[in-house]
Image (tube, rainbow, N blue to C red; front, top):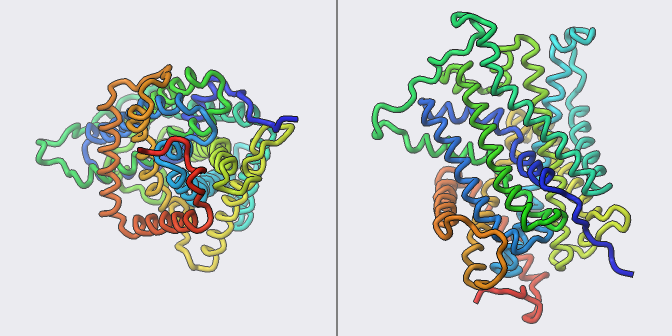
Length: 488
């Protein structure tokens, strides 16, 4: 009897939904404030969002070629293992599980629960349903239990079958895209209902100044800080690669998902930002610290129910990103388990559901433990309560992601040299300049991270070093058991 295997059950639309759904989380609701704070001209602010999208698109053009060479579960883990050896693959899995994916899941679930609480506490929403106007339905620990419950419930859905998780991802991605489309058109709908001088009418004068007076007037430091915030909002476009083994016709659908999904995200982000600026003056947007841009935008156009709409949109967005991460992340653990770089049991496939069930459960359990640990430390005063809600869980995630994701893109050079005659149904447009530009820009971002966030960078390097030590002590294979395609 053969061992159960993963099944190719996901089509192109679901693959695109994974890209769109895991990229669009809370960034488009929170990061416009960061851009407005650092870039005072609308034209430059739009350019920051365009550059972030262009960079993601350049990366997608490059990674698509590598993904069709290795359409296997694990994504970047496989690319790094085959391109640079087992140690590189292990270090990505080490950082990805403990920090990047775990922190992302915990942070997304935390934001989801906070948004749900805001909806249920909104006086206008409660009155519309006939409830008591003032009320807080979720206490501190009730909210944390809800956060854990959402993680575990979505894990159960994904254990039941990749088709179930994929269908849920497609449905919720359509909802979140619809909410951003609503934000995009809402100012123009309102413009048709109100006279130009009305308080709720959008104002084109908010788009001025469009550009700085001269190139010398551009604050490059501020522009770089804004770009880093935008890169966070675009992060996750690679997330379709780890489920490549479960996508039908991967040589066709992987490039389609990477390029099509990234293009959809860029369109939605630019449209939403234009809408925000038409309604909220830039100086006011820059000063928003205790609320999101989307909340102020919605309240200005929809009145008291606007806050509930913004919270509901944020709920849908983070819920989709949370499910997408639970669909994608465990496949890295599964691939490592198959290779013996993680407990072998993690590389098992459920005989009935054909999913890496144990890997999904372990990933969800670690994220839930992070939520509870941060909640406990916050309740005891060991952590800043305001920061703990979101930022603590993701402060260190971007650093490790930048290092290994850039190496994954750079592996295209390795495979072009090592496997020149391999069949490539898709070849990177503009090679070698497209991947070279991506790698160069992300290297500059990494250097800037060391300069601006030295503590986080050093902690990240230390954690990677700890992983290397564990590999050397316990996991280093004999010479005959190294990757089949080491660098020569």
